[in-house]
Image (cartoon, rainbow, N blue to C red; front, side, top):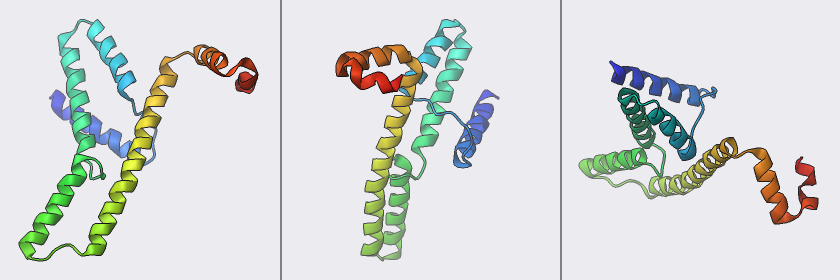
Length: 147
């Protein structure tokens, strides 16, 4: 019962992201906080549910056909298998386009991961602490515009 609810929630979350909704993406810092809060409750069933949801989300994200993730590798292997089965190789233009898309999407994936990580840090660290650290590093005259 819980597995089907988790699966439906994950699908709804991805649909919300695709449609440009307000689904919140959490990175490793937020996941550690949520996991820590879940463990503090002392309810083993809640712990297992959280870790199952986390693993299902990671599996679903990794299966997306985005170059740089396993889903793209699966699509690539499928295309390769179909081309071998038909006796024809992929045209050089198609292979070149796939290679360029892989490089570009790897760059976008890195930007996304950095964005999620920085977003997590901003949520965790108090703004005053960040500003005072920045003042110490740059000097107070350079950070006056940030306040």
